[in-house]
Image (cartoon, rainbow, N blue to C red; front, side, top):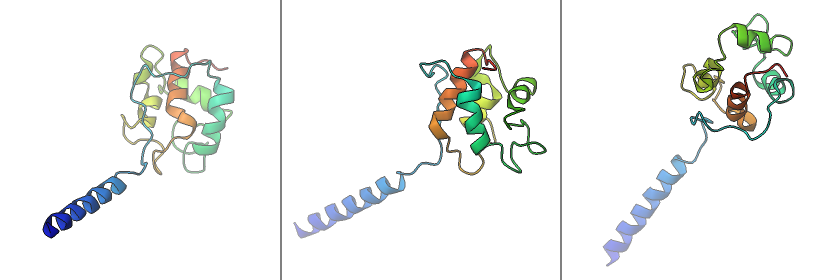
Amino acid sequence: MKNNKKILSYLLALMFIFLLAGCYKDATLNLNANAVVGKQVSFSKDLVPIFTQKCALTGCHASGGQSPDLSAAKAYNSLLNGGFINVTTPGKSALYMRLTGQLSPAMPLTGASNPLNLNALVLTWITQKAQNN
């Protein structure tokens, strides 16, 4: 009986360790191409502030950095003219696929943790025909 208790306590400890090891966030993924936000998404009010804070940084997606240039003044044209948006099949847009890790490298490079459910906002914006609003 004592051995059974010892074995049980080892199993419980092992399960606890596995549970703790699995409880961390290394990515925010929204792989459901039909999962959209239930409101009109504004490029200038909803997306540009996030791009400015998280993406348009020196050495990343700012002027002179990696394409697309996501600085406030250039983001819209850079995304549309650079082939990052597919309004016919929004879930296949390069921007969305990079944010969800379906296209490598996943964005952001420093941890693929996207704020304010950016993935769903971007997908909804593209589904709504990617307006410059």
